[in-house]
Length: 159
Image 1 (tube, rainbow, N blue to C red):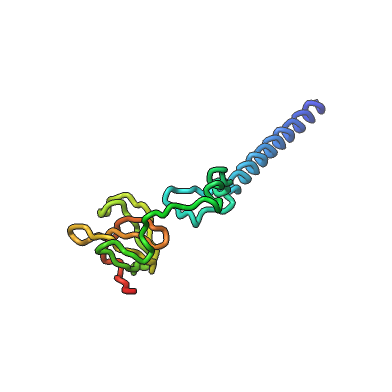
Image 2: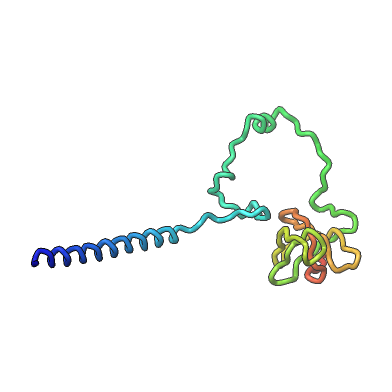
């Protein structure tokens, strides 16, 4: 009778120890899994200047073709490009006056896809206005990205 009672008590404590140990192991596993931060997502409209310099896609090696084109004996052919100061006809320079910045849209409507953004006080080039003069098509001076913004959130700059 004494050995039966001892086996019962020992079995009870062993079962409790196994349950507590497995509970602690599961808790530690999930705590460690949630402590690892996920990788930063990269979106299509991210600025290339803001990408992580340690990311593997930034580390490219020049190919033999690009090395051959960079040789001093090759003469680059002139291509007709706009000078940085030349503006298209009817365009003017401006800056963003809305303190939170603006959303750059694909079309001149509020429901259009957002393709980027323009920060407060950022310099822009106004290219055109829509027919009812509520939206303007702009190009950012830094990233050369084009899109539509509301007309009341910018100010013309004469330089």
